[in-house]
Amino acid sequence: MPAVRKLISLGEACEVAYQLRQHSGDGTAHFFDWLVTPVDGLLHIIRGDFPRFAPENLSLQRGDSRTGFVLDGVSKVMFPHQFPRHGRLIAPDFLSHYPSFAAKFDYLADRFRSTARDHPVCFVRRDLTRPQALDLEGAMHALLPQADMRFLYVNADRTAFTTPLGHSVHLPRATRGFGDSIAWSKLLRAEELVGDPFRLATAEILRANIGDNHLSELDRHPARVLIKAMRSNPNNPWFAHELGMWMLKRRRFWLASVLAKRALKYEPGNPEFTELYLRGRVGARRMPRETALARTLTLLPQSSGAGPWAFAADLHIALGRYGDSLELLATRLQQDPHDDRLHALRARALLAAGRGPEAERAIDRALALHPRGKALIALKAWILSSLGRPDEALRVVEAGLRHKQSLELRLLKARIVVGQFWRASRIGKGHGRFA
Image 1: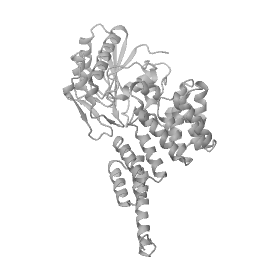
Image 2: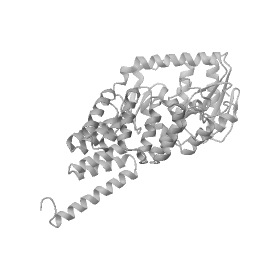
Image 3: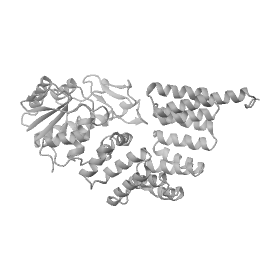
Image 4: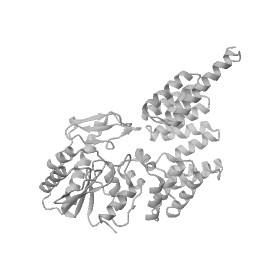
């Protein structure tokens, strides 16, 4: 059952837009969907009838963020997804893309006004007090006096309130990602804003609106949410794919292949579903690498993403065909020069081929694109160790641990320390390389 009212997010962050799209099935983009919008910034924009974000007020911020964001100095709105990235980092020349950025938000402002004029609307906002809600409703009524609008305020605070055009509901604040999808589904159904929930999967929502670099959000959900989504909407193959990806990352390869096979029943030619199936079969040792490689190579012409290319290169490395892997990666890197995964695979192939110095340069390129990637830091340390520079390897791992604690990096640090101790003891006994 479609929503009686159009659902439009007013922020303050991505969680609200994501949840409204996921459960209503309406993927229409709106102005505040993928922004971080403080209350004062929201009121500034509504009261000013969507003034254009001026380029002189936009600045690139790093802060504690792993990826950075662009900040509008007037409204204090943050733009984490609206400018191109070099790898995981927003490009330093982001303002060269300002014309398309401004045109996009002009278009979204027009859509916001026309949707509110032509349809009954429910605006949904995260975390507002009652005085702030009254200010918002007043500003919105002044902007769109004839609109049929209602407001839903989703607060972590249990204190309930009503306003002339809406009311508050309680939902604990999510600790990360896009929120608690099961809690949101119950809330939106109780408010009679959606019928059957879980209409769109993460890939369907994000690929069209944020881009492939942010599909890591596929891993944000616990398995129980994905299982609930599959039961609620069994005919959407992307939920099976999403759960399969979740299983793959946890090395549950056979389950990943079973879920991919289920998705392929709905879309037999889908290259992403096929890639997941092949990865799962190889990981579960149910398919020879040679067979998987031959099938993966057939996916490359029809795949827009780098996944099948990376998988094929990985299979070449596993089969000892380092030259073939490097050739394949060189071809794809011409299309995706800012994909840190491809540079890391190139580093692995070079290291396996005994070309350590080149491998170090390749992993440095990957780290320039994704400075805090745990797997990249670990690979850099292994390359340095293989080059006979364990002290540098240890410093790389320790620097990574200062940013974020990781069991993988802690274990790697221990192995490097033990290796140094072992080498020192062997030298002391006359069995070292300089004996």
